[in-house]
Structures are given as structure tokens and as C-alpha cells.
Length: 222
Image (cartoon, rainbow, N blue to C red; front, side):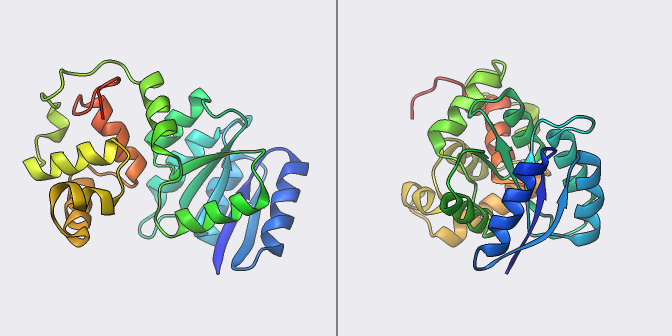
């Protein structure tokens, strides 16, 4: 069972999500929060696997709540799925930087929502590479020239930088393994090491760092 915490300040939306999750096989609605503050408190107490996080709320926003929840998690942090009305909401980018694992539009079908919850609970990052790239390119400032990564990446080996570059292009671990002619297990090892060195908690954060450091530049060819 995947334990899910639902966070939304609109009572009808929140109640609808909770009802759908309770009726879905393999999912368990362990709680609901009407504010970012309540989400932080319930996340610490209930330790859900996945949090459906509304991004625009009065008081503590979904972005700030995401930051606080992940910062407070000592181990096995929850996976956070952002729910938004607009696919290029400027707040979504901030949520990805904070460590969210993906986002979905609020008008998505129940079946797609259930599949999304299962996917991020399993460790996947939930957005197509094209959408992620548009988000990042629309929100990042130009970084150093390509090939001259920032100081943040100085601790990475050349192979780890190459893995990070391919992750930023939207390649899966399987695709990266094929591109570099190594095993998928080797790719996972490189990815885990670079994320540990950079203190990252999600694949989405790794993509953001690759752009902001200048390792990958907006508009660069695939």
C-alpha cells in the first residue's frame, strides 16, 4: 500500500482527492491538510509515502511546505507530487528546486493520477523531458558557458558530470546506460554518488542544478 497525504486549501478538491484515493486499489489516504503549515505537521507525524501538494495556498505555500517537509525528513523522505492549474506555473519550478518529484494538472483523470502516485512512489520523476525542459529554460538565468560548469560541480568526476548532463536532457537510466555503454547499475551508482555530493534529494533537483551551473544551457541541442 502507498500511503498518501492530500494537501489542498479548497475543501471540495481535497475531499474529492481523498475519496478517489480511498477507492483506488493499492493506495491509502492517511490524512488531509488544508494548509502548508498543517501539511508540515502531518507529514512529520504520519510519514506518508507520497504527498499530493497544492502549490498556491494562503500562508505557507506549497513550495515552502515542500522545503520544510524534505528538510525535516531524516530518512525515507516522502515523494511530493505538485498539483497545479497551469502546466507552466512559475511556482512549479521553485517546487522542483525544493525537491518535488513531479507535477500534474488538477484536471487530470483519476487513472492518470493513480498511475502518477505509483510512479513517484517507485522513485520515478513525473514529467516528460519536454515539459521539464520548458519549465527550466523559462525560469533559469543564463549560467556559465557550456563546458565550464560552476564551482558546485567541482566535486564530481568527469563521468558523474556526463551522467548529470544526460539526466538533464531527460534520458532514463536505461537510456544513459546505452549511451555510455555501461550497465544500468553503474549509472545508478554514478547518479547516487553525484546526488550525495551535491546534497540533492530528487532527480528533478539534479536537472535544475545541471542548468543553473551551466553544465547544460537553455536552448542547447539534444
